[in-house]
Image (cartoon, rainbow, N blue to C red; front, side, top):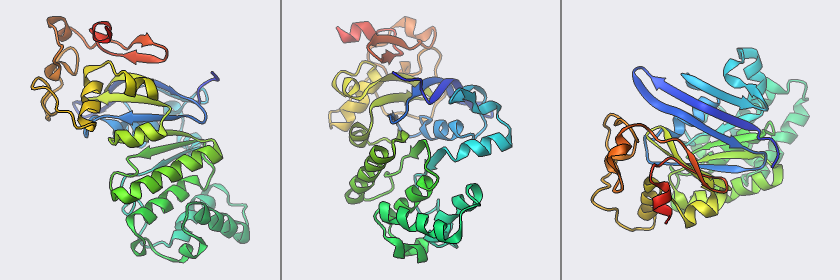
Length: 309
């Protein structure tokens, strides 16, 4: 396998006295989609923003092509941003209501490709609007004139205007009607195939993650608990939390020992200890490290081997 585009090592984020992310580490390769799943409040969106330096980071490294983004000054980070783009969760609120779709798509070009002539800029805008299924006539319309799905297509088009290498998708379909979600997912799938971009795809919709992702990272209370190739994770999840997520998605009731998550302090030891049906006294000692249980399959659980047998 080639050298990863993105290496994240021991990434941490704190908001005041609250630890939101701790010791998150993973790689992302060219042309790959890494799915990031977990319940609401688990730290998924914070992780996405931390990678792009949109929130302060308390520790760790974010290595992009070998360069630690956390050590870049503003000018160097600005140069990296054309390769690192994001699609936000709420399509309407992420668009400037006072700008037409054409102006929204022109903005990244005016910042990063100032040498483009007006004609070439318009040709780029028209081509991208066509590519995302809106048509060039959409350039003259304002965000409030579009549906939610159409606004998300504009957001995707804006992110793709600079031909990025990495596209971070932060719950891009969660606010859309179910009938529209599939269209947006297929659009992202086609764009990745055609442009060869890497994607970090964040969602709580496991069916969507399974469709798009090559590997899946599971996060709980700001700690990664499992990462594996997609087919491995869905066929044979190991961590009790991952098993619970998949069981809930398939309509299987969780056991009484696994109540819904609540907004309570993170316990000592394993972060999932207070909900785990398989916990032991030793689980209170310390958060377990990720350990390999199979090819590219890492799990943070003291009982991982027992659960596989």
